[in-house]
Image 1 (cartoon, rainbow, N blue to C red):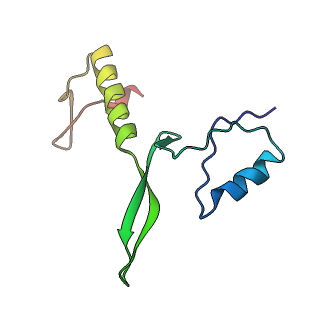
Image 2: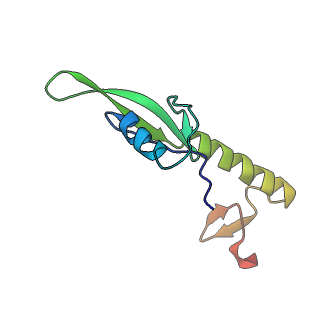
Length: 101
């Protein structure tokens, strides 16, 4: 058994692909423009082509992922009592001592 809760189809005519998938699998009828996919920010992007006209595409970003990763690291630092300048290696401060791993 396989369960997939997200499918991202970015094409000129994505409905054709989704209809083909729907002929084999049961899909929810929820075709909205994505804002996030598998932890990655997704948004429409308009760019100017070299010959003048603009074109629409999709941009992927990691802003939300990075913010959440920083929160996790900050929480772990507090949990384990790690200060920002806990270890010095080669004259540089590092937040964690790798000798414990």
